[in-house]
Image (cartoon, rainbow, N blue to C red; front, side, top):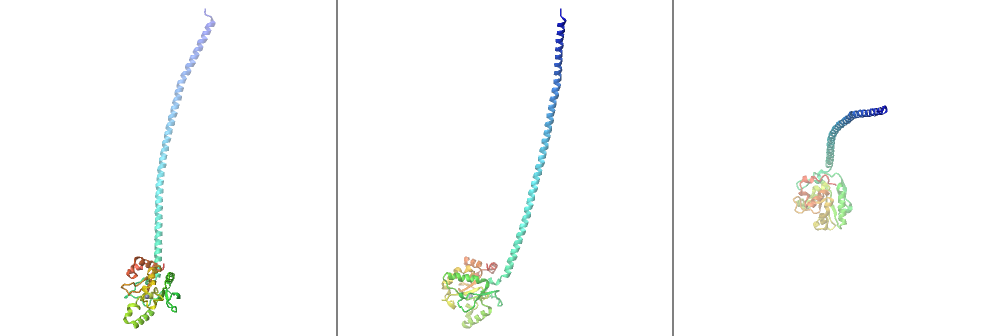
Length: 307
Ligand SMILES: [Zn+2]
């Protein structure tokens, strides 16, 4: 006989088991859809995030490209601008140079206009300086340099310092150079010429009166002598003083006007003319003589004759 207790106990176990089963079944049944939902959510979120990021990334790349191209454009504009600035600067510089050139040309022209063009003119047997010509300014030569101490001899004021240097350095070198003739006015020259003509007849034309006639009237020609040679100039070309002049006079702007064998006048070793240091140096270095040069070539040295 089955007791009621045993039956009840069995029934309770069964119910409990059923409950457990049911509850287990319920949980399992819920887990699957929930899990699926979570998975879908995660995937969706991931996809969403991925798509979103991708979109953002593309946007970023696009913006970057825009920024880059705008930067390049800006740089291009900058380069263009600096080119324009450089161009403008060039124009300004060129203009400045032109202004400078013009100013210097004007300055040179003014200097040339103020410089006596006659000072570098060639005077020959057939071409004389105008009889009315008088140098702008004349100065007395120091008495110590004169052959005749009781005379007053004058030269062009602008060459005074050059002559003084020549005399000073020649004296330092042991020479006894003296000035016997310098500036001569047209009147003085005429008187001198007449005197020579009177003394020597027509032969006078060949040596003194017309020799260097114009050059003495310019105030830039000097006749040198020595105490021994004196007034006749005889043998001057054989003196050490002449040799010294040949070697050094150019340094002070003086040149021998009428060398031996020239076609303009007879040989005058004592007669030296100031033509400026620049031209005198060129002539000395090239072994040329003033009268051999073309007048146009000579004129280029007029601007700096007293430099
Ligand atoms: Zn002379």
